[in-house]
Image (tube, rainbow, N blue to C red):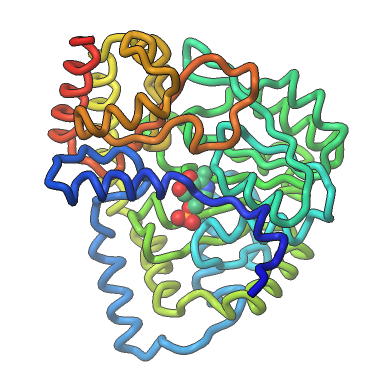
Length: 396
Ligand SMILES: Cc1ncc(COP(=O)(O)O)c(C=O)c1O
């Protein structure tokens, strides 16, 4: 049977291949310290689980409205609007099975074939995959390492913006763990307005922060009417496998996204949506999650600081760090960061992704980076794993 040609353009989340390598290594009787996947080993808060059980018992097991049940849309409009100081109406909210579907539905709703789409690189790999799959023109923009973390290459963005119709922006960024300064965010919004771009604001980590407050680019002047927000329950409530999120969009776009829902999945699971209503009614469980993640962040940053040849900033948001490992790679004599990651797994059990799992590297990139997620590993294991990594590099 002949497969559709467009499948040649479909990418994937290659971090899952790192999970497989780690699982294979563990199956051979080895200890693995899992820093590779942005999943969580923390339980979903009990009030949410209980609400789901009640909803199943109450028979909330059939089809429900394609854009979401009214109670959840109302709760989301209220919560998302309040957290972003924006007016969000129920009609702006379209419930989704997770945050990820918002990426493809944004592209399907607003991009014509060959339209230019700006997106972050390094960045979440599904952006590039979906742009290419739907026949768009990828316009990646990069980041520069700074004292405080990473900053968007605004010169490059300004250069590319005239060729773009869409912009994907992920403040509180995966994999970099960084956040825009107010000036950077303002400049991106200014460019979006100047070039009349439709914007996807991927806010998967909006509430995953340890200090300060997040600002949505959608709340800046001239932005709400051109922006689709990606919202997800996955991280905030440790609900990655439940598949619950939403798009927040201008009504005309929201209606088209709801039509795509009807075509793709009919609706998001009814009893999961009822659990989402409870999550927003009583979000107290997410505070305990955040304080545990903060302890892990501190342990990860401290552990990496003790590894020779590794430089790492201390992100205030997300659950990722993106250390520069150039000197460590050189010290061990590896020709690539991929060899470094494979050897680290085999020599120390520490498993992580590299820069290459987050988009195609530009030819002029000379520094080596890796990404560690600390959402699925305990503080004790972080200490032990990174201690082994430090000893291994130190011995070289
Ligand atoms: C930047 C970013 N956007 C979107 C998603 C998708 O999240 P979800 O599990 O809600 O589909 C992720 C998941 O890791 C992410 O890192």
